[in-house]
Each structure stands twice: as structure tokens, then as C-alpha cells.
Image (cartoon, rainbow, N blue to C red; front, side, top):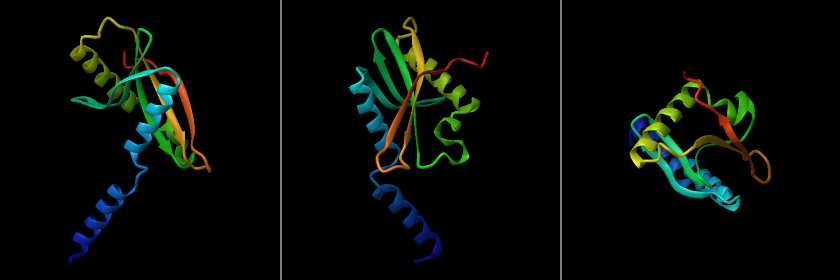
Length: 136
């Protein structure tokens, strides 16, 4: 087996064998939101302009939730990863989603859930209305 074939096999095996990848933590975040009374309507929504981790309803509010998991706060932690470009992609994807689903008349907001897994027990930090449309 060539070096590259072995490296690709190891990379693929690592990605598929770990139960605690991004999808795992997004599922945990969805369960966390359900426990707070949110109704999850969609997960991992892929739009032309980006991906939405979780779309939920809370009363009459449509809530778009970005989930970030980090082991350490090195390099700014999870919230640091939601920079201007990421917010712009999320806003574009959310607008596309609202239009596609006919929900443009409903109020909406953007939340984040930062999951710290660097401790013995993971901790969830939910920030409601974490950012607004700052692309104007």
C-alpha cells in the first residue's frame, strides 16, 4: 500500500470511527434545546450559501443555532470561530431557508451553543440572540 493510500485510509478511519464528531455534538445540542422547550424543525440544513446546524422554533420565533465544540479555549474558543464571514454565510443561508419554507413573515434570531469538552463533563453555553445582521 502506498504512503498516500495508507494516510487516506487512516484519515477516513479516524473520521468515521469516533462517535464524538460534529454531528454527535449537534445532536447533543438539539437535545439540550429540547430540554429548554425548543422544537427542533431541522438539522444540518445545506443551502447554496451555507449550512445551518439547527433550526428550531420557540413560540412564534424561528431560531437558527450555530453549534461549536472545543476542547480548549486556545485560539479564542468556539465563539471566536463565528467571525464576520461565518455570520455572513449563516445570515445568507437563513434568508434562503426562510424564503424556501415560506417563513419570511416570522421573527427570527441567531443563537449559539458553545460546547466545552475539555473538562470531565461537557458544558453547554447557550447564547440567545448571539448576533444580528451586521452585513448592512
